[in-house]
Length: 95
Image 1 (cartoon, rainbow, N blue to C red):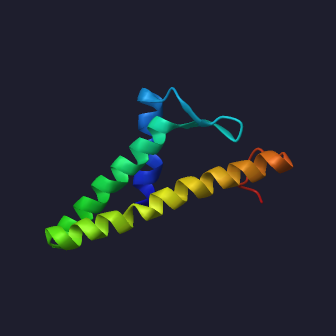
Image 2 (cartoon, helix red, strand yellow):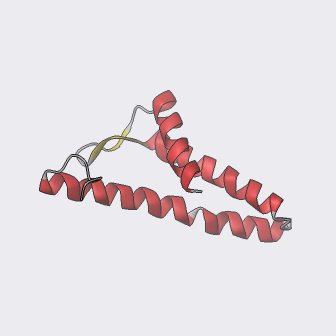
């Protein structure tokens, strides 16, 4: 799910991203990236449900619950970017 939430937005944003999500917080984030991340995460959840042998009912519920992780990931990433901008830090890898 984490990989899907990283790869999906990157690819979708590069290919179709024109409309910025919140440009003053994170100028590289686009609405296409959000859609791509959620779509790839949903596909990963459906694949995981199939591999785990879940029925359609259980797999559907699993997919809906699994989409909460990427949604919170996107929100968390935007919050981190907002805080970094507020304190003037470019790279948070050394904090």
